[in-house]
Image (cartoon, rainbow, N blue to C red):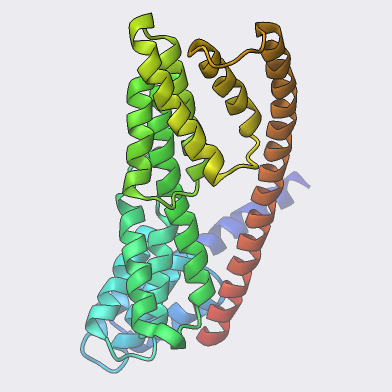
Amino acid sequence: MKRASIAFLALALLALSSCKGEYEALLASGDADAKYQAAFKYFENKKYNKAAQLFESLSVLTSGTERDDTVQFYWGLSNYKFKDYYTAETNFTRHIENFPLSPFTEESRFLRIDCLYRSTLRYELDQSRTYAAIGAIEQYMDNYGTHNTKKQECLDMLAELNGRLDRKAYEAARLYYKMEDYKASRVAFRNVLKDKAENIYREDILYYIAMSSYRYAYLSVRSKQKDRYMTFIDDYFNFIGEVPESPYRKELDIMYKRAQKALGRYSGTDAELEAKNREFERTYRKIESEKEKSARKSAREKAKAKKLAESKKNETAEEKAQ
């Protein structure tokens, strides 16, 4: 039994070695027809890394021939399927430059921006590729206009990428608030809205602007508190004028009454304010819990939709290849 197992293992290793030897020989071969057929066979069998290497090798042999267009496109598509998005993006860029009128060009343009999109980084990291992806998507939409069959996918990518930039700006400003540098915090948040008024975190930013001005006033020396509380009151009215039904409203209402009391304009007691503050904290915790649940559900739905879209995209590309 043991001898049979050893013999089977030896045969398997021999077969593997033989297959590897055949592939290496093919890769080194100058037979363009054999390479061309083998490259597509590997592609159809979803061995995308081997297909990409063959198409790369083949690109030298087919340069300037009628196969050149197809080979360069499938070289990029193989790398894309292999999830080597950096190399694929370079492949598609070269294909677009060399064959602007190719029947593959529109797909090359879209796959190039998809590569850029997929190779972008989390909001905490460098966003240069995010800006490059946004520029490429906008140019693609301008080029194809009403004939754009990928319009919704482009809009979805733009929404996510712009949202990532919005969060980076928001979190950078919030860092000052966490550090308790409330003067710098207010300036930073106002600059975020100055740079982009429609930031998706606008409500949160307006809240932090008001809270920053309140805390800055509260921690100031008495001689400067009046003017700084007045700044908070301006920020408070700016907030409630824009988002009167916000879950932040109760907390800011309490801060407003405290500011009014500090300015000698509120007749209520500290106990009443504290009771309202405790009520707000209970409500706020409940709201935050619901927001977290909603965010987790949304993330699961997005992941599911992305996986489904990926599956459909792979099916479409394979049908075209066949």
